[in-house]
Amino acid sequence: MGRPHVVSKSSLEEEAIKVGGSTHSRATKDLYDSIAIGNYHKQKLFVQTIDPDHEDRFDFDPLDVTKTWLDASCHFNR
Image (cartoon, rainbow, N blue to C red; front, side):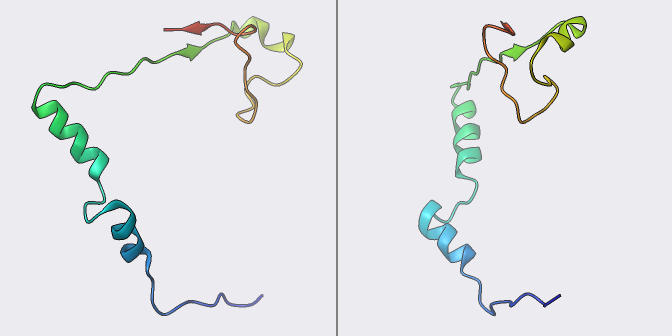
């Protein structure tokens, strides 16, 4: 097996600064700044669940992370 060719100079940090500015964690800073002024971030979390006894009723393995559960077959719970 061959050894990987390594480029001597990396421009990842320079590219990141060009794209995102000098603050790499700007989303985190924005969140903290918003909280500091009382503007709290809100999200809704929905979870799809199935009865373990119904697991074999699907034409796919519901525990397979590559599969998507349809809304009709598994209800969203808030």
